[in-house]
Image (cartoon, rainbow, N blue to C red; front, side):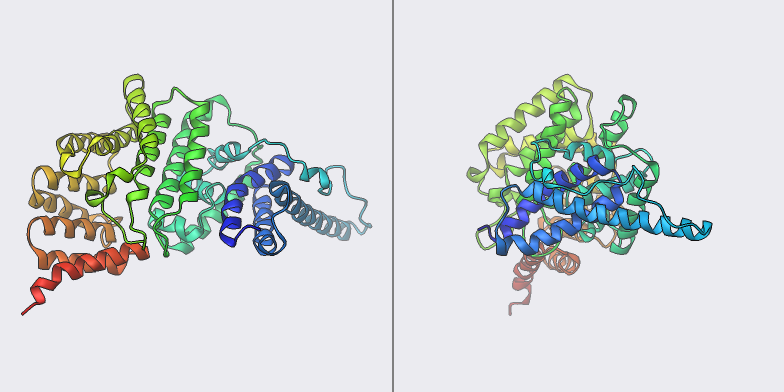
Length: 424
């Protein structure tokens, strides 16, 4: 029998596939998503006790289909009653368009994976870019509303409303469960890649709770990106994103100690990095940079490649990394890019130059007060030798960090730097 954790991982893998199958069969994206959520809840309750069924995906589709059928029949019956009351006539039998009840045929589900089609459906052009991202992270990535809210730096209530409106809008468009037409591929692909990027980031460095990372989420992001790469093997940005994921994921075994303590990049044991993922990532970067127009994911992958190629932290080519961040900031400016560039500036031009750069981010409402800004400032102050100020900034960062391992790391750095100053 699978453990609760094993069931959770299985359900995360199967959730988008089940949703895709139900939407393909019935339509009604908004109601289908609710029905699948009910099926997932039933599975999470029953499977750890009764055992996982022989065809778990078919089980989810069957239960969700029955829930959806009941819901649609209830709505149809209500509409007939209302119409009959208005016309003073008794309601007639169900129309030919009413969905059939789910049967045991749902248990014999083919190997078709509708996740990619679902991915593009969630990126429908009628939705705003923010809604596309939020809905896809919810329906395909399996992130909670709170996790998505933190990824967007907005309150959870705001994100809940955004997701609800997105589901309603998908229903109102009457969108069919088919791949996008040729003229919409490029626009939807940009959103799809951004969603996969955010999904991977949440898995690699969990933004809340006790786990340092969520390997099942990074694995799903890599799997979906491989699927998109299989559809578009010549797209440089798809190759760049896949390379970035692989080169980053390769470092995960060295990212924390057995007790969960975070290990910064400069202190990681690089012999624990995954050589197969590094080799594949480097090959993808080389191919993308030489055969496709340059984009932000390719540049980020190139930065990750420089780190991967350095045998030790001291051997890192920070001049090249800074040049790549300068390029990235020109083609895709953002406060996060500036924050990361400040680290490279500190290594090349010195910490004081980096602190001047960080000062400009205080005016950006997206970053002001964010724990990452305080953490990078603390790092620069530590490099500058101002340990008291660095300790204060590490402590400030710890107070606003939502990840428990990250908070503990920041608190430990603050304590280490404050200790000499407090000694008699």
